[in-house]
Length: 492
Image (tube, rainbow, N blue to C red; front, side, top):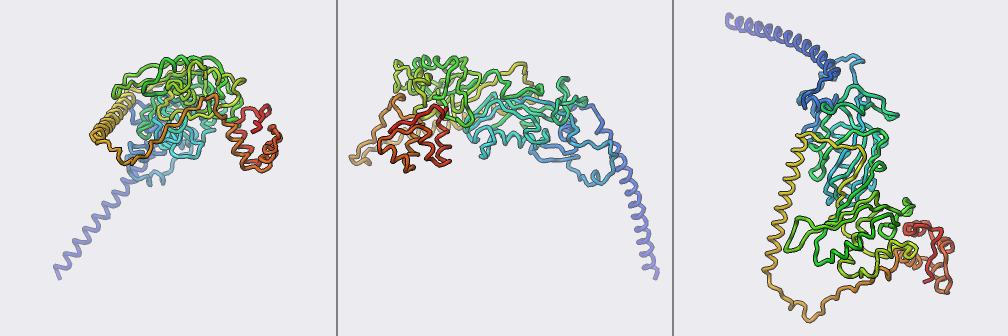
């Protein structure tokens, strides 16, 4: 009987001790919750953000930090249940729309090979713009849609085109605590304040952007600023290998682009949205680059202007290539003829230059000075250097493959007497059918009434012809007409 009684007494003593420890822990938990509530209140009103960790905390606010993998993480990975359950006074709660905002211009670079252009309106993914907005959402730098953010972009580059100087502008969350009213835009911002304590936009965004997109710098901008309409000039570069091109003839022809001209014959027609085809080219230059391959020199065309039409640069370069290849004689002055819309009212058919070598080099604005912290600049430089080394390695591998191909013997016996395919003969640009004529012929072949009229020898003007077309055919035709009121269709 003594032994069982002793065990029971020992168990009771252990239970009493554990209950005491549990009560002590419960009291300690309540003390910590109280301390946590006080600290949260102090942090929400704190204006001191001297360290980068505090800057990142301000960006994330009550929405969580973003680590290098882009995952949201609050309180160092600890559970947020206690914080959600605790009671905080109403005057200490800060909703997202109450955070300071600043209107900012961002300078962006991207390599366009894998993107379906810059703009996201084309409903094709991925685009450069969609990737940028994913990063802005992930870092909690924006709240609202593009209209509320007063978003604008300088250039709308096409699929495959790259840039080292694209500029966008929009409202971003700011680190400042003394906001002014934003002239009608929701949120608060500070246009003129020291920038030492501002959020490091470049570093934060570059941590979550894909490797082929990088932010190069940022600059505060007035709310009336527009990345599109405030741009003074845009500069493009188009790279090409010489391959026995007559560069002198190309440069002489290219200088004819300088000045204000109607470039409807050097663009993709967009009559539904564009009604003025006059553009001002301020600079044109062709120069060699510091790159050679197998004895061939890399060159670049630099074209600078106030604004450009859809595919304008690639169309201009395509005509210059025809001149450099000797297919279009410089003496015929084909550039002069295409710039004279009275003589050549509609664009002849020709293939535009490929998109990959085209780069939006820079966009110039008055009063903008882009900034970048030393840490962000070093990280950007290291990233680009690593990418350059990677592409140099790929180039070396392709060069080895090229050398290996040269070791394989030629064997033309497989032709078995078959004649080789002849190269297509060149038709001068001024003798080619226009895009409108080709469109009309396609539509006429599908339209019985128009076909019968033309077969009987009648001449159709636009009104007579368009009255017999379906809505789809009329829309297709209008894409190629700069001015439908003065257009007359050919009789055959």
